[in-house]
Length: 178
Image 1: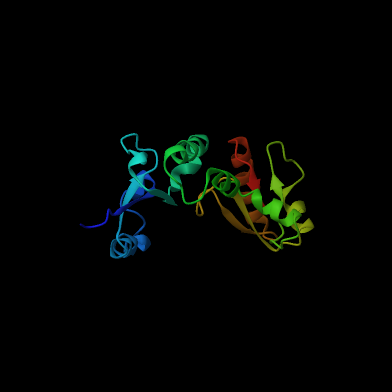
Image 2: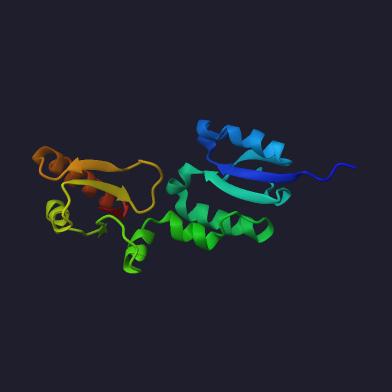
């Protein structure tokens, strides 16, 4: 009698239904280990998450557009199926403010400042206070390079663009890290 095969859900986004191209080797490697792994779209209501032995959050890069719903989904799934990283870890790590928490605990990170709605102190001044020549603006909740801008602090044209970009992001409800 053949032992039952473990079932693994690799959670992804609807635009990567077959996983990221770099991850295509995973399915075959899991199969060789006796694990039946499949790509599953995290917000597909047809998925029976209880039918899996484990859920691995892999490439659900659209979570940033549905952040609250994504966190609720992780918490709901882990009620009946283990999630490789528990919801409290996902909640903490999916909002990049965790970097500031790490810095507060003495772990070195690059010079970083949180910029929230109503920030009016001037982006260039903040960059100079942090000692930056080249800087990045990135949303606290973001995936990959989406809504991220790299700019040169002493380039007036780039600073104007960066100020406009920051204003648009903050006005749109995004909190940003510099």
